Length: 109
View 1 (tube, rainbow, N blue to C red):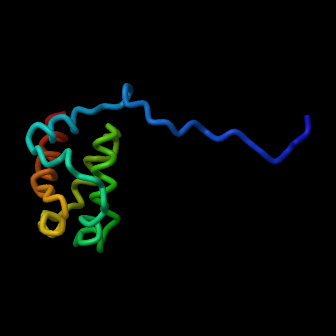
View 2 (view 1 turned 180 degrees about the vertical axis):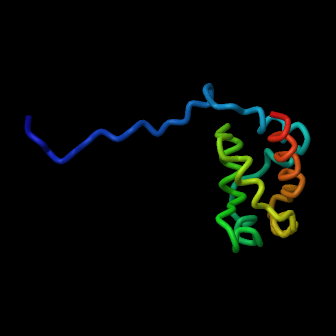
């Protein structure tokens, strides 16, 4: 067979039916501003923990909303709960309360 230099890529679709949305549902129930986050990244830009570690609040929010909960417990432990992200958020998402509720949801598992 002739090699044309092309190969098939792996499927990158997100199958929401297979993902676990328990954490997202719990946080949404406890903190209603969770669902108005638009993942703009302002929180991540002002994050003190993000300057010293690889913590990324925006990435964490997207992972939870997608139901990709594999590394949530490890990531959430990097947050210092300083509250800078709450002050910077243009949508007034109570990010500090979101973090606290994510921690509660992870511990309930």
